[in-house]
Length: 56
Image 1 (cartoon, rainbow, N blue to C red):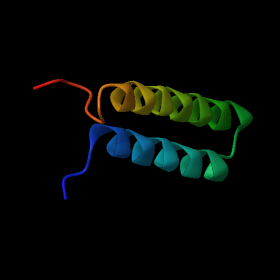
Image 2: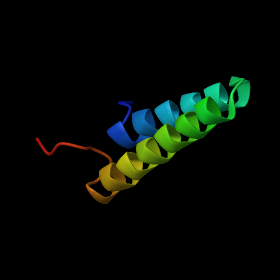
Image 3: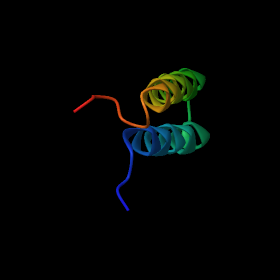
């Protein structure tokens, strides 16, 4: 079964949140959380396109 772009984007968001938990500085933590939110937005966009970011 092929992995969709949406699933890949959600995995990236999960990785960012994991790094945010490990961040020492508050600024780093905020930036990782911001990046996670951006990945989640991309995942939602991909889902609205049928799971893929680019239509082929």
